[in-house]
Length: 350
Image (cartoon, rainbow, N blue to C red; front, side, top):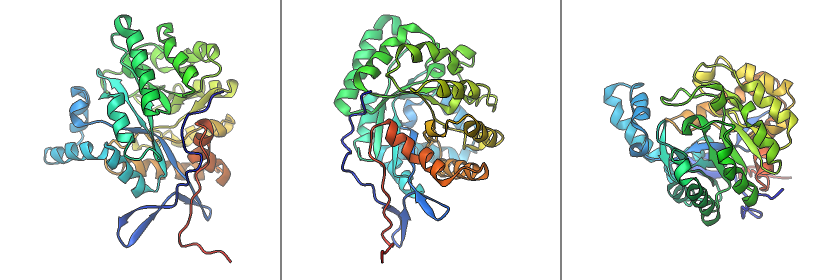
């Protein structure tokens, strides 16, 4: 199977990557059982306030008092740039992140391949781009959308493809989109697919748009394509693990299927996180789970998601080695990168 074409074979990401304060260096990774484990957050979003859909803007503004709304808009425009994402990663101690292009005008909004590539270019050693495509005019310009997406992968070195059937409003088993998988196979780029529901207005919630079992035909037809089932089938709209067993079952039965837990460390998922982690462990798919948060969203989200997820793994009895796989090593293996090595600048050897 072709690996991602990242030019990272000699890159070493060190522990001291930034600082919250001049006299307070930030150490990369999370400390678990006396060790610092590297973290890659594979699920991050870019964009601007003006490219969000009106309904999504209204949902976000509805959460906060009027006097805070201008601040939130300004913070979003800053936090979802390449520099803003890097600052968030540094604050939290995350070594690297995947940044998604998005074309969901009816639900969350648009972040084009070109815009996403520009943000990733701020530090391509730590930010990895995922290309996407426009689906709402597919019968008219599907081939053109495929061409543009493949051009973005080749021109900008995008490492993966992002698809969100429920947001882009086409079924998981729609064969008209097989060209996306053909490009993934040709380019050696894994595909991240949003599975499960979303609380965002306009998102489809019917099973054919959300239940990953509807992807099984494509998974079989393209055994050399790596499918990453985003959110692991989490039914965020109902705050339930409605489709998670379907996701785990596919990961168990197919070597080319992986999982991602974005939003399961969010406050909205507090009631299901432990159950989710128990199902992952019982299903024997720890080596198939690639950590992601679905951030930045709002100030503090990336950190709170990671803190909750790590605490949940510890409470569920995950070993240090199991957590190391989920937090970084599964990602580097799937995307053909070297493992991240953390250096402690204050550590001495005798």
